[in-house]
Length: 84
Picture: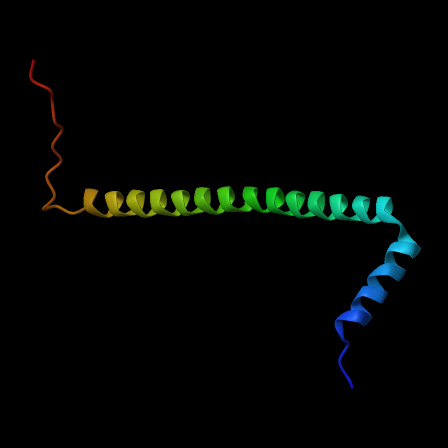
């Protein structure tokens, strides 16, 4: 009683097609697709910014670690050289 049978859905679909027309429904579908594509592209730069933020944080940690060991009197600073 409370639910809609398949015949009711067919009638609703026919009314929607008569009111809006197939061309307008097709335009709505393509507009929705373009909006979803734009949203996905809009989300990509935030991922790149997040990755660069993580890289910057890692670089700062390495720099702080190097500065801490540079002042340690037991640390020996050795430069490697290539032998030819």
